[in-house]
Length: 298
Image (cartoon, rainbow, N blue to C red; front, side, top):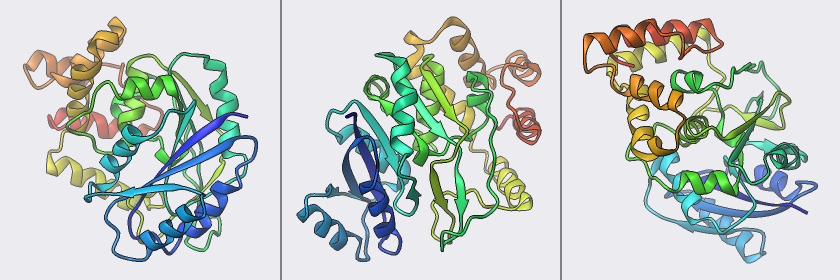
């Protein structure tokens, strides 16, 4: 039976974590190990984790408050050796076949670096299903450089992919799932998208990141990011060059350099503005990306 190391980051999660843990323990067709990092909880989360560890159901540790991205990164660094690794949020509920579905797809990659993710089923705080955001990714590197659509709690990777990730620790990442997917695409890893949801992705007031947002709120957030001039995409491209330039294909390397260095000259800016190589499926994201490049805030 294949073994999967689940990596969960917690923060003041006592309200929902019990349901999530029960769903993890109920995974079928795989052997599950659970490593938890608490990111500085002040509620009863740590006491609950202590109880579960005493019962032999998980291992946990704590540390300074790193926020989700670097808390999950620390988990990836600290995790024991395993054929497969899965990121896990504290407040969702997994279907019993979530991990075995991922492992079945990933096994086709053999020893090559490989990453799996799936569609999500959105639910409210009481686990009632609500309208879900359906994704139809192109699964191209250019799309990855312009559009974040992979939900970390659906990600499962093999040990070869984890080894690639740990060769370089970025100084800037917006979220761990964006970085992991960008690296996988940059190096030409095998990527498997499962259009079937295997997770109830709970949306509630305490989400660090969520999907159940109105169109107006989504656009408001996009405009706010432009105003803040975070330049997330070009900064991430710069991190990719630092860590993985030597293992990228010539095409991926050229595209990464284009995104990372587009502010260096008018010619570079114009090339990125008019290239078709960073297009993604949703028209709204294409327009947002072009606006960001035009404003030199990509």
